[in-house]
Each structure stands twice: as structure tokens, then as C-alpha cells.
Amino acid sequence: MEKINYDEFKEYVATNIRDFLPEKEKKNVITLRKIRKVNQTMDCLTIKRPGSKIIPNIYLNSLYEQYKDGKGIDEILREIADTWTESISNEICDLLQYENMTPELIKERVYYQLINKGKNRSLLEQVPHRDFCDLAV
Figure 1 (spheres, rainbow, N blue to C red):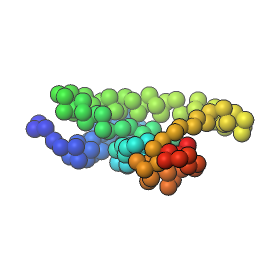
Figure 2 (figure 1 turned 180 degrees about the vertical axis):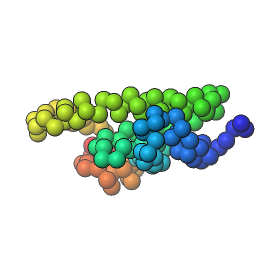
Figure 3 (figure 1 turned 90 degrees about the vertical axis):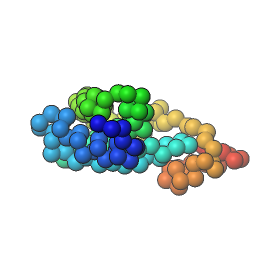
């Protein structure tokens, strides 16, 4: 197969990942999304089980770099399916852990990050923050 550009790669992955999932997972909802992170926007693939509360994000930017470096697209699809299957298998343990969370336990898991306010305007529109000079916390 001739090398494809990034947009074609994303579409190919979203269209073909179902073929690499276990049979019982083939009816899941597959979506391409953009996620805002500090100083950047990342493209991700989500595979959602109906009724599930946990939806792992699989970031495609670095996977495309692997593809450009010569890794086969089927190998990448297999890795995505394996990563998703492993992530989702931990769902019950993760949910049980969070069901017992108290405000005190949640406070222990909150981490602050100092970021550039100008480069992260769109992110800051969606998250709680405090301005600090030309930065935000």
C-alpha cells in the first residue's frame, strides 16, 4: 500500500479497527475526536462499549509517526486493538476504586500545572483555572 497522509490514516484506522477487535466487541461505537492538551490538540480514537463509563482515548499522532517510519498499518491496528482490550479489561477495577472516592481522597489526586495562558486559550475556556501573570494554574 502506498503511504497515506495523516487525514487518510485517521480515517483508515477508524474504518478498519473493527476488523482487529474481538468478535464480541465489533458492535462498539468507534469515533475520531480532538482532545485539547496543554500547548496542543491531539487526535484520538475512541471505542465505546454501549453503557460503559470508561472510554480509553487512543492517541493517533504518535501512531502516524510510527507508520511514517515504516511500521505496517495492520501492525498498528493490532496494537490499537490490544491496547484497547487491555485498558477496558481493567474497567471493573477502576470503577470500584472510584465508587469509594471521598472528597478527601479526590483532593489527594488533584495536581496543579502552570501553563502558558496565550498558547492554551481554548483549553482554559473549558477547565477551571486561575490567572497568574501571563500564565494560568
